[in-house]
Image 1 (cartoon, rainbow, N blue to C red):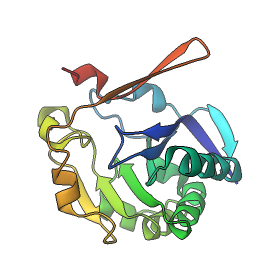
Image 2 (cartoon, rainbow, N blue to C red):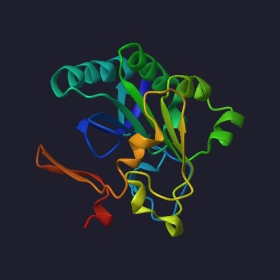
Image 3 (cartoon, one colour):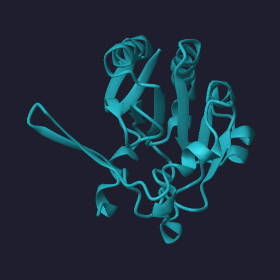
Image 4 (cartoon, rainbow, N blue to C red):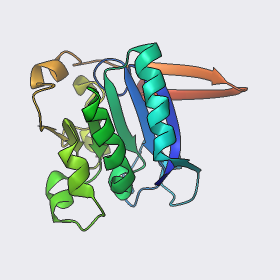
Length: 191
């Protein structure tokens, strides 16, 4: 099973609670004004990667970086639910948490016909849903972009208190790899 991936970070502290393996998918049909990942919106082939190869990378990160889970973002992960559900299931079976960011609301996902979207939710611990709305930008919510976005806890792995610990948390990570600088976090709002 293949995924169209924009980027992977083996260990990030900017994309959710604790150390996380972050997967940014390529492609999004939403066009949120001032989206921080506009380069991930086009529905184009970027890096086509087999799900089992990503799982091998996650295993490596678990053993070497002691990650506590994965974060799925994009782009729009819901557009690639089938492969991501496969990965999320493996993670849950191996004691890794799953945080999913989606521009779609939970209601839209439940009403959609995206292939395996409900299966992906089944293996998700926390969903942060809703489009980013620039006028509702809220840096008090840590890694959650705007105040309209809701947090859904599908398991007891995390609670609202865990997220409250990140209030006002602004993070920027720089990785220099093969003469390329990669930035994640909130670079445009970093103080």
